[in-house]
Image 1 (cartoon, rainbow, N blue to C red):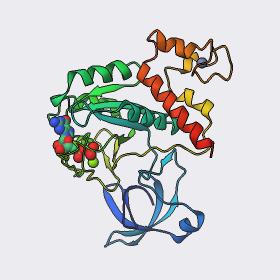
Image 2: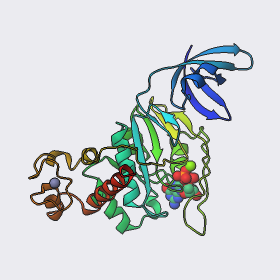
Image 3: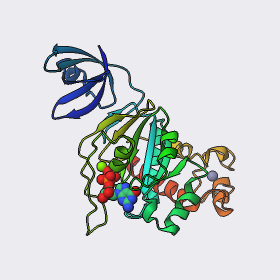
Length: 290
Ligand SMILES: Nc1nc2c(ncn2[C@@H]2O[C@H](COP(=O)(O)OP(=O)(O)O)[C@@H](O)[C@H]2O)c(=O)[nH]1
Ligand SMILES: [Mg+2]
Ligand SMILES: [Zn+2]
């Protein structure tokens, strides 16, 4: 039978078929092949005890993409959640997640949460920096404001929520799927950040056909051996300019005749996005020099 892994916990995979969820183990052969089933996987499974809802996963279908932390597969859209209140957004982190989305070939969007306690300056900065490049919705998971816009933006895609602990990812999942029961956490008084209560990954089906993943958050690491020339393509606003600089191998740092740095000077490319590009390029260079 065909199913989808909706949750993984303590060596069990929870496989959903229709409305039924089977507690499944993975066949030993996966281990030999070096395959770990992931939440979001489409799979074949065999029921071993119908009454107890127990089963074995026997086959994993090819994946569109997969992530290591969190361990999930088949993400269509990475929705980066940022808070317009506390914790304050860090553009460097947002830009790393956006690059990760580009690399994994997912759609990317920004969900600006907590507009009920928004800092106006923060809101303006986020809109100014991102709204021309990526879809951006403003919501409050607390008051429900913007909920319909978010649902429309998610459509029938499979969406994973990324973003710092405490920005409201689980609260958003609960708003979209009140019966889902995603765990939410209080903000720590000391740091103003979340205490990260979501420890495992789980997916929830939306009425409109979409699927959302609640995760403890993404950690994006440099892929060893990533080519520094590839990074520019992960910034959509740079793409139309690539190939127009004086030097074919321009990395858009201090080279003469660089149209990218020129675009930063005249405001066509946002400075904070460019700074993220430079910082990520430096990381790739460091990584590749070992
Ligand atoms: N004021 C306000 N607080 C929110 C909103 N959404 C979530 N929170 C609070 O932020 C804290 C962290 O939420 P949680 O969903 O656990 O964050 P996660 O770590 O990203 O999953 C909780 O105390 C939530 O009640 C919102 O729209 N407005
Ligand atoms: Mg959470
Ligand atoms: Zn250049």
